[in-house]
Length: 159
Ligand code: ADP
Image (tube, rainbow, N blue to C red):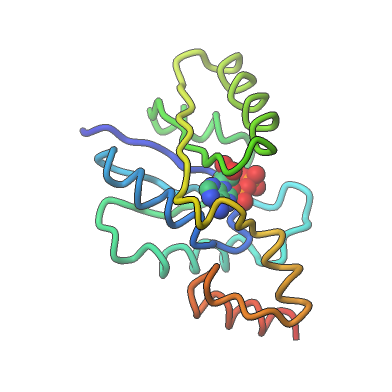
């Protein structure tokens, strides 16, 4: 079995920033599993099934990428599947504190798991799902930030 990595997150919804990280990771690892977290605080706009379906469609052309969902701690999902690597994206310094805390907490929970941070192309470094949702509500054209079909799903959801 080759080198496998898990890219966990909410992906509510998937953006070109996430896809940039997925593509970069797919070049480094034999298999990348994008793992969509169930609603922890029930505040996601899209259901876990919708988020998985959108990611599957958006990443369909990348051969060594699969998409699944998980409940509970990412580190438990990773461990259960015998994987050692968690991928996270780092956009700005503002991401750093949270990501740093999470990576070190995960390391405490299982010292054999490493978190690898990847930076997106700078043109996506300010793209976030949260902002996308807010901007969609205000009628922004978001085709530069999310795939067209995701933009359409956003508009449907916010109607
Ligand atoms: P979370 O897991 O915190 O709910 P997301 O699902 O939005 O967040 O993102 C999953 C991972 O992808 C996180 O590590 C986040 O920092 C990263 N990420 C989100 N948007 C981008 C982007 N535009 N460029 C690079 N990484 C990103």
